[in-house]
Every structure is written in structure tokens, then in C-alpha cells.
Image 1 (cartoon, rainbow, N blue to C red):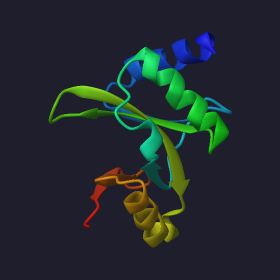
Image 2 (spheres, rainbow, N blue to C red):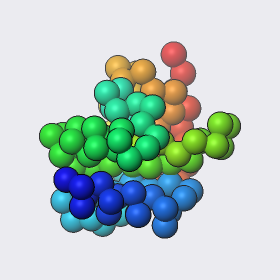
Image 3 (spheres, rainbow, N blue to C red):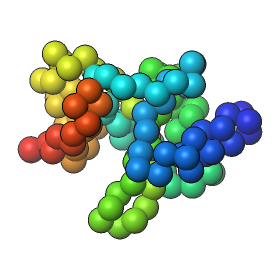
Image 4 (spheres, rainbow, N blue to C red):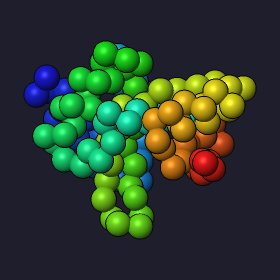
Length: 115
């Protein structure tokens, strides 16, 4: 696990603006809609990264990292990827997970969630 944490941490340092990563292949996810799980919210450091990785390995094996420009913090999340044609499902899941936004990887744009 320590090696995987170090590898993801290094990847985050090399991609400071954000990334979405398939942990099974260690390749970037470039298509679809990324929605974070509530359980891994507010994870900012290596210690919390272990929890994010464990959650991700139990679910879709996909992890995201992004910089919140409002507070300058880098966040790690276990994420679920939806097809672009499943926007309604992605929004519904985001609401269940209490997310304020989701990310369209295909078009590189944030989608705010309206409650």
C-alpha cells in the first residue's frame, strides 16, 4: 500500500491542476463524468490518501485529485465515472453523495449541482 500511496502522491505532484486516474492500469481517465464519493471527501494529505485509495479499490478503482482554487487546497477523492450519455444519473448520484459539482472529463468542464 505504501508504494501505491507514494505513486499516487507523485502523480498528484506532477499534475497539480488535477487528474483522474484508473488505479488498475495507472492510466489517466479522459472520458466520462467524474463524481466523488462522500466517504472520501475532504482528503488532503498522504494519511487521508490511504483511505481514498482503499475506498477506490473497493469500488470503481478510480481516483481523482483536484486543486480548489478558492482555498488553495488539493483534494483527493474516490470517484465513480459515468458515461457522458448518463448525465442525469451522474447528477442524481452527485446529489446522493452531497457533491456541489461534478466534472465532465470529456469536455474538461465543471458542472455545478443545483439542489
